[in-house]
Image 1 (cartoon, rainbow, N blue to C red):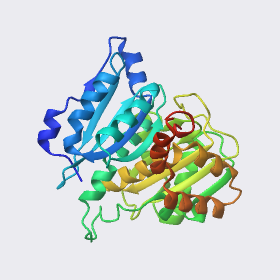
Image 2: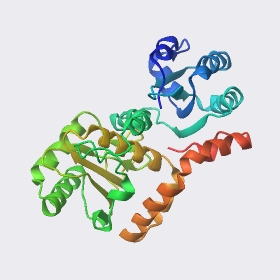
Image 3: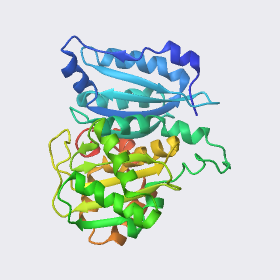
Image 4: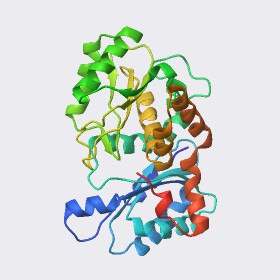
Length: 316
């Protein structure tokens, strides 16, 4: 599914109020909401939001969904504008489908930006994928966290002193189980970290890298015994680490896994249930059950029906 180039040219992308740039950027991205609807509804929706959000900063981005007349919108809104936006979408495009809805930290790290970019294009990538993909480096990009995370890749109450020790343990793990030199894994993770912290805030970090010589994607969940400093945007130590390692060049797979992380770990209830898991098998069952439930996808219509788009539905 995607939108046409004409729609892309016709829709104005960024709207802002007259206030300092740093504060404007943080406020305009306080909540992200995804909506899929018919392309014909984009212009009236944009006009309605422009009117409703007058004096407030907001942004609309459009992802192309090929070979259809539907488009995917990413709306970055102040919290107090979310309820009105849901009402406008429901009024203008009754057949619209709501996707992600989550808060973004006021000072997002590059790790958060990775997730935003990934979840923005993950649906388009899945539509573009052939029904029976050929076995290429991108053929297995349908892999998800629950499919890749086995009990052997779950490390609970790990004795890890800091981020360097974490990366060393991940490297040693991959060397023993997947035959990839530990130094290669450590170097890849450190190079990505040098671009900006992959700590997301709320105690979550998603170190990730593409690794030459790796034959299949690797997902590891690590719960350190003592939370780690990760230079997260909220300065909170990290208690949940979800590490993603993919073969070199597997770009779509990489983005889809990042999107999967975004969908799960932005849900406070999921994080709370994860912390309650006492064994590796419980962790794997939680990931599998969460994939089946798709809780985030159903949160927005529920909020609209209650007339309340704040509080429990907005988690980050």
